[in-house]
Image (tube, rainbow, N blue to C red):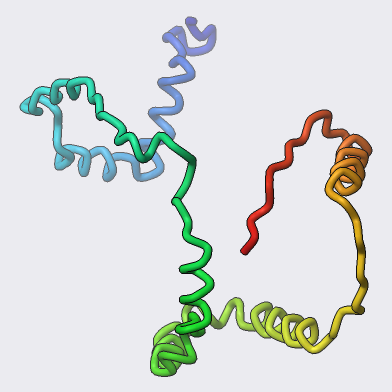
Length: 162
């Protein structure tokens, strides 16, 4: 467009943005851009990898997950139970407290409240209630509850004994 007052062409919107950028110290930034690497001598992109096909061993095709030996798990739990990490390594907690102030301080109040809630929850003893419900009754109740909250389909599987 040509301005009626000056008789010269008005700069485009992009031109105005470039002028504002230059006025606000953009020249310095533009001068620094010369030190940025260019892609003129860039290496060619690597070729795509060949298709990968692996044969799945037959023992992995039997069942999902790990094959568990429940008797061995029970035996090991009785013989050598897992211990809490900081009970075994008290020096680790001292290290975290001395070196972890940066991440501990902002969250220490929430952590303390959480520890307090865990302590009060473990002190409470739940009431002993003996329910003799059969599996079809529990399944029916679960499906009714799911339908009530809007789930049209749910699935159940045999529970883990451990």
